[in-house]
Amino acid sequence: MEIINALGKPCPIPVIEAKKALRKAAPGETVRVLVDNDISRQNLEKMAKGSGCASSFETQADGNILVSISVAEGAGAGTAEAAPPIRDEGLAVAFSKNTMGTGDDALGAILVKAFIYSLTELDNPPETLLFFNSGVRLTIEGSNALADLKTLESKGTIISSCGTCLDFYKVKDKLAIGNVTNMYAIASAMGSAGKLINI
Image 1 (cartoon, rainbow, N blue to C red):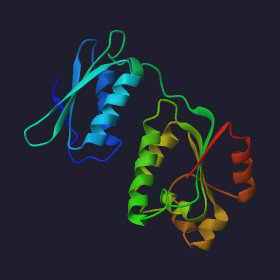
Image 2 (image 1 turned 60 degrees about the vertical axis):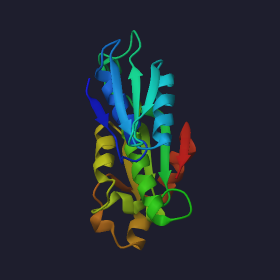
Image 3 (image 1 turned 180 degrees about the horizontal axis):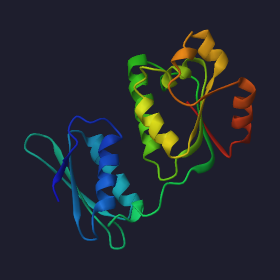
Image 4 (image 1 turned 180 degrees about the vertical axis):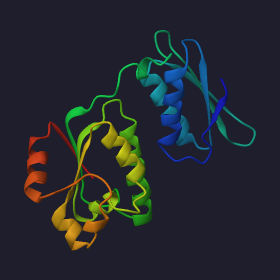
């Protein structure tokens, strides 16, 4: 199997690309991923261990790291893709801002996009995504998260943006995905969620 070139790709892309390759691989085959930092190497090894696969790595002369993951017996051959994705009933993710974490906003924008992309790769996508305050900017025209949000919507995830917030930022006419909702409905969705993640 050819080597997956994940050089320069931020977390969690190397892990996601490796998982996709593992789903297609037959038992006994080896998936190889080339990364340029030790954090990616560690994340790949954790994913391999969690999947019941053996892994090893080799540091190249140029400093890059080649991680090899051997597909365990009973895994691979598309087993993870055999059934259509099911929503994680009761999981709601609330986005109160268009960045993730505190500190540098540029980094926060990168992190929130990576987080939304990661949601598309979950075996069980969330039931509901709620956007309010500056979080509504993630659902309007020009948002770099739109493609991933559309993927989630196609898997059955309900996407709702606060109408008051859209009006406040004067972007209601630019809403590009999901529906307009109100704070009572947001509070109800958060209160009835089996699991809630606040961003």
